Length: 269
Image (tube, rainbow, N blue to C red; front, side, top):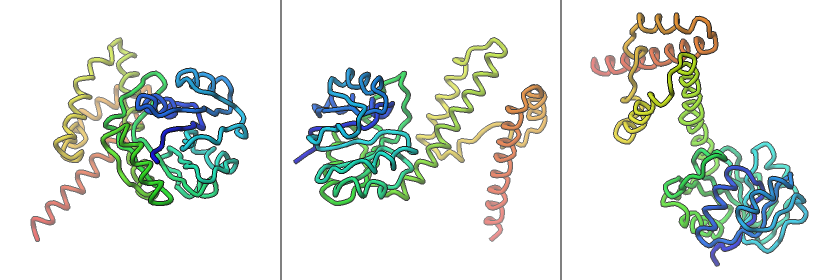
């Protein structure tokens, strides 16, 4: 039997996104649990289901229990769950599947690889869903459920998922923090961030056709010391941004100089 009923343990960003996507596919959300009754009530109102802030009051009628909370609390919650013959999953990129082994005889990971904020509901139809399961039957059911939400479902083990999560932090979280810095630099000079949007769009667009290494541009890769010195002079009153600029410029310069030397050495062989 396919999964048709779900309980969310957690009422944050991922639970909200998944819940809305699932009810669009006629999956019934029976209940939302959160430590705070306000959070549980808010998501339950959105998903039109019951709610509780008492973990012992979880309904036992659902096919699937999705733990969607901070990584730091997954073990604590998992230790309170005893849901034999139900499927229990978490949505974390970095927590191993084994953390759920005592929750049920059927457990797994249901990890949507994307960035989520409360202020925006996104379309998950092309989001990679990384699936891992304790057994073939559970895996088949989780793949079937994910396939109703997205066209990109992948069987990924815990070790691979941790690597993907690490790479995602570099690609998404650190990149966005660079945008935060760029925005602050512009705002301090009365310039709107939207002037950078075509540049940002083109930076991402290139990566559909060429590798990140091939797409690298800027003064550091050119070793344009005059430009870099000018930029550092402009940042002299902001030691944090100056430190970031120097570190990244040094890393870029060293990486591509080493890469160039390797290429030159290979040509000599």
